[in-house]
Each structure stands twice: as structure tokens, then as C-alpha cells.
Amino acid sequence: MKYDQFFTQVRIDELRQIDSFEPEFGFIGSCFSDHMQQRFRHYGLAAWMSPFGTTYNPISIANQLLGCIDLTLDFTLRAAENSCFYWETSHKLVHQNPTELKQFVDEVRVNAHHALQRMDTLFITLGTAWVYELKDTGLLVANCHKIPAAEFRKRLLSITEITDALHALLSRLNQHNPFLNVVFTVSPVRHIREGLVENSRSKAILIEACHQVVSSTMSAAYFPSYELLIDEFRDYRFFEKDGVHPTEFAIDLVFDKLKSALFSEGLQRVLTEVAQIRQMEQHRFTQTTDALAIEQHRIQSEERKVRLSDLHKICW
Image (cartoon, rainbow, N blue to C red; front, top):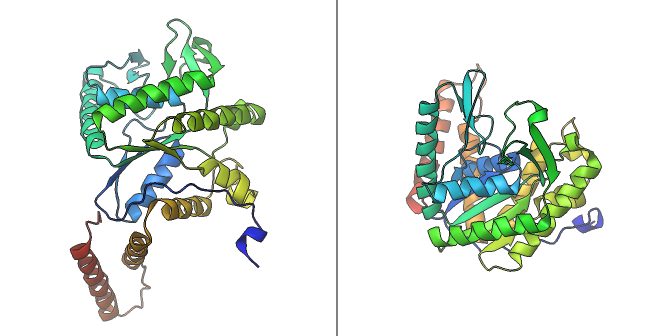
């Protein structure tokens, strides 16, 4: 029987075809971006990951990128309980010394500034339309940093707010790098802390906002990560025990779909060979394995890597 007799397939629009290892890719947004970036790196592709940590809402993602384009923009510092952080970054970027924190964040912003100039394709994964704002200033934060909930106001972004922010972002990105392609996607991770009904409202807003933006520009496209997990695979076996996060197998399936949509058939064959070499390098031998066999395996793996590297610019 055919695959489509068991699944309702999601139509995937072909993305701009990549046929070599020359282009550089970037990932920012929810934790799903981390998973995709790791797989790009596994296949030897040059893949930048946002240094600002997991960020879920589109306004904060846009603000982070704008802060990398315009290095004169200031992030908002907050000191609390012997630590300090920026409201524009995730909970991972915390330091006891504000001067050292500023030096570190300024450095990663400069590095990101140059990475965006070199980049061919930037993947932006939106996680939620629910946001938290500081009651005293109205500042929309990327992360609450364990500050008491009483200090925040929670609300749902409108489609217009998101599209306006993304249009402004695309305009600045285009000025910074006229050749950059942006691919929007919505994370399949459910935000059940908000409630399943609230999660569905949020994802619907994000999806519609993405489509409105993509339909009005030539420099952006949409990849249906959310739809693949929810509609095509549509089974709790593709999720972890919490019923929220996709399994590694499910993420691999989504990556395979992305690989088919993004890369030429010729490049896909090379990616398969890179994966085979990775597997050879990670092979675990038993204690009884002959030393000569182990050395022959290592030599064979290295020879394949060298041969492939002579033909392609692979990031091992």
C-alpha cells in the first residue's frame, strides 16, 4: 500500500533549492529551532544558532534580530537577587556582574551581525502568541526570568501586531543582507501551561500571521513543521511521554521533509554520505574487537571524509 493511504499528507511548497555546501543557514526562535540546527550541523552544513536562547514569541524574536542588525540599540537590564539579565534574552543569559554581562552580550551581537550578513537562509520558528508585559513599563519580555507573576500582564498578540513586527523585521533584514531568504515555521510543541484551547488560539494566530507575511513578500517562505506533526503524523507515538514535545524520531521525519523541499537531489545524496561517515565515526566497538580492525575502520572513515572534503565545503 502507498504511504498516502495511511496518512493525510501535508502539501509542502518547494523552497529555493540549495545545491552546495557554500550557503550558510541560521536558526532562531523556539526549541524546535535548536533541533533543526543540530541536524543541519550533523549533515556538515554551516548553521548559526541564535545566542539569545530559546525564545517563543515573535515580537521578542524580532527584537533580538533587530538588536543584531542595529548595534546601537540598547537591551533592557534588570538586576535581581544577586544576578542580572536582559529582558530581551532567555533565562540562559544571566550573570552576577552587569558589566561582564554587557560585554558578553555585546560580543555575541557583533558576531550575529556579521553572521546575518553572510547568511543565505534564516529559519524563524514561532512558538506562541501569548506574551508577558511588565505592568510598570509595558515592556514585552522574552522570558520572565523567575520574577513573580504579579509583575506581569499576560495577553494574546493580535495578527496585526505580529505581521507589522515581521514586515518591519524583513525590511531591516533585507537592508542588512539583500540576498537573505527567510523561512517561517510554527513550532509543533504544545504550550499546555496556557491550556490546550489557548494553545490552539495561539498557534492559529501565528500560522495566519506567517501566511499573511509570506504572501506579501518574495524574500520569505513558510515551512509547515506544525502541520506535519499535528496533521500528517497525528499520533501520540511521535511525542514524548509529556504529550507535548516531539520525539527525536518525529523531529527526524520533519527534517527529512525539509531536506527534500530545500536541497537538490544531488546535494541530498552527498548529505546521505556525510551521515554515513558520521555513523562510522560514532561506531562503538566491543572490548574484544581486534585493534587492527578498529584502526582499519578509522582509516576507512578518514579516507572517505578526506575524499568528500576535496569535493565539497563540509563543516565537519
